[in-house]
Image 1 (tube, rainbow, N blue to C red):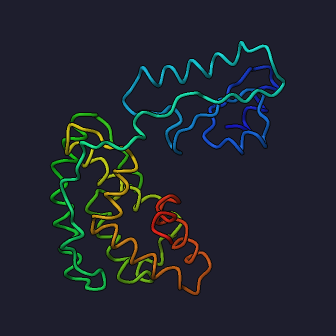
Image 2 (tube, rainbow, N blue to C red):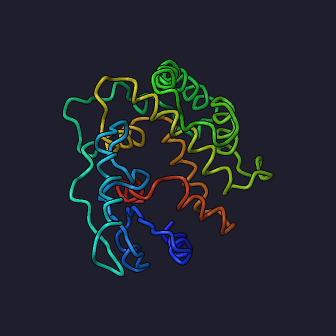
Image 3 (cartoon, one colour):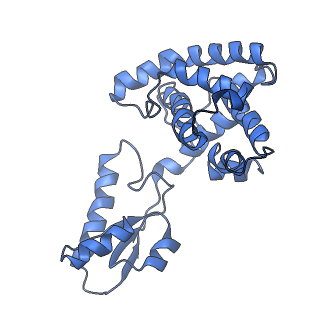
Length: 244
């Protein structure tokens, strides 16, 4: 979007960029940018908070009236309220306590199916309440995603026809969003995104399977497959937190 702003400005259309990476905005030197101290994927901050989000949008649009320039980079002064951990949120499930080792294919597959069935009514409740879901990029239903993941975990060569760089962002994201969305309806208290991701990576069998797949792929002799294992299975903050 920052690069696109240059083309629009050349055509006489004033632009404002909302930036979540300040260093990038400094280097690109857009005519007008509002840097927000929010995590990637949340340029307007708190989900389901229209008052807060409108304030972010209004702050960005006000840069169109700012007298200084030609390059204007302004810091948004407020943190995302939802980024703070909630002391009154406690995850109701700790699947990792009883999940078999992913190397035990049959038992792990059965446990993963049970885990996802446990979350199924919660995910349905989330979709009914919000009328939306981020699950669906892969084009498969969630059971199809589970089967595909297990087949790839057992033998990546068995699904060699599938481009791993297509499979990773679609199927893995569908599975992860299924879990995270389900947990958002498990309590009336909405956890911080850090708490939610921590629960997923520390307490679910799916995360154990993803970590096992990562260990397998990073030693592969194919460069692209190693890249998938190193960079495309876990979000950067979780790689850092887990020391990977």
